[in-house]
Image (cartoon, rainbow, N blue to C red; front, side, top):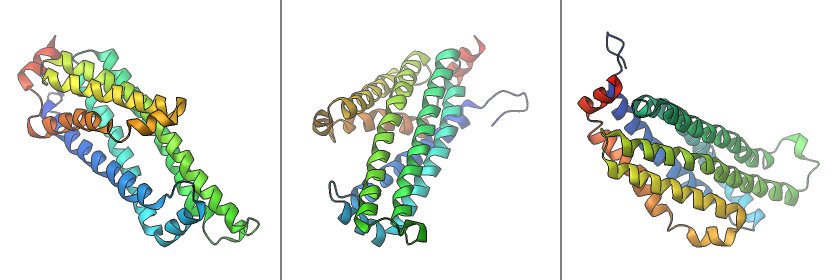
Length: 240
């Protein structure tokens, strides 16, 4: 991704970041809407266990897709850091660290989710537990994954807020996208804080709050894929 002179190619960085971000969107929606929402029956451990046992390959597919999503997100953190560094190197680095922190937390939460499948297996070491106990622990594992996901989004919210500010100040990406990305960050922050402070508020916010969140992030994705960055303006900021 570098020229012979050692200078980065911002347009290549931008479009690569956009396509990776698009995969993150698709994988995230699949894991949440087509895997967890299909398998988990709230407050019914036995029904949830039956869903997991009969759809084991679906859970494994969602788990794998989510980890590929995390690998892509690590690359996105590095690419966005390189693209936004000319605006403010320190804030760009901070945004990258917030994003990487969110990725690490979600990686750990993913292992907890996979534990549900282990608990419902046929291994001999599980024979000391009654089926109802294992069903309850499996549902607990999935609930803990949800809590971990909320913590992940708390840190990701700050990555969006910082990224939105940097895009707004960049001049080589439209300011409106920076505003929309900042609104997405505020949405994530409101959703995660309500998840822990008052779940009833979180239930009222969802799913409506995801509208500005999706618009904010997806606007950046589309712009990076279709238009990339204004290279002369990016080079001028980098040179200064």
